[in-house]
Amino acid sequence: LVTAVIVVAAGSGQRLGYGMPKAAVPLGGEPILMHALRGIVASGVASQVCVALPPGDEGLRRLCDDFREELADGGPLLTVVDGGSTRAESVRAGIAALMEGIEAVLVHDAARALTPESVFHRVCDSLVAGAAAVIPVVPVVDTVKMVAATTGGDAAVAPELVTGTARREELRAVQTPQGFTLGTLLRAHEAAQALDQQQAAAVTDDAMLVEMLGTAVHAVRGSTQSLKITTPLDLIFAEGLLEGPLG
Ligand code: C5P
Image 1 (cartoon, helix red, strand yellow):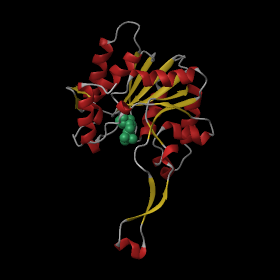
Image 2 (cartoon, protein in one colour):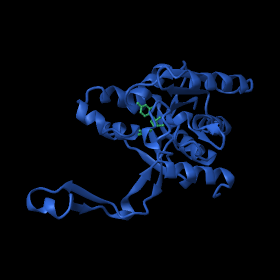
Image 3 (cartoon, rainbow, N blue to C red):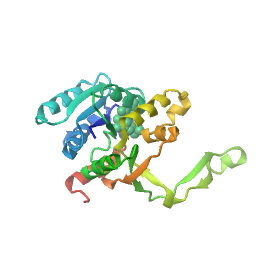
Image 4 (cartoon, protein in one colour):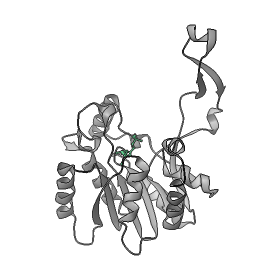
């Protein structure tokens, strides 16, 4: 399948606290985005890589321009677009810039910069085998509970009350790259535009939109190395991974 990877890198990175977009934060001496791009290209799955950047960020745009020069002949086409105010809008900006002939799209968080090549391959293999949508997942180590804000007298006891416990063996933590046939991703994001603001704010990945269509979403094995660099602690962990991968 002729495949494009849309890299969403337009987040502000406020939780990392560097005062710059997360994609620009240095990891092992290079911006996080650079690691993500190298990983994608090394996997060999992409005919096109489309990066959604924070609008107006000249530094990251230059980084992409320089990386384009580095790409060997026969490497993927590297395209840059301005991201939107939500992750989904950034994905839509990427979709709008896809080249003719793309059949499958992987949507990948720049923040998952150390994703192993094997994960890209498992996602693509599943698409080739006939999946319309596929996501990489890992088991959940914590027990996960639902909570609600406490009201009345209970509020003096604690701020939240447990309303239920999910069965851990049925839970998975979801990563990227998430893979879709082009038609499936287009339909999912078309449907997303009909959501009200509150519903749209609750959309945290693309697979969720596909689930809303009633289309089957398949899950393949992800990797603990695909962590989403979000907090300063994640950055320390990622630096450690660069020293020596877990295998
Ligand atoms: O904020 P969150 O952790 O969900 O972001 C996941 C990914 O989506 C990050 O790589 C971030 O750069 C990207 N993003 C984006 N455009 C936004 C918000 C987030 O591309 N408006």
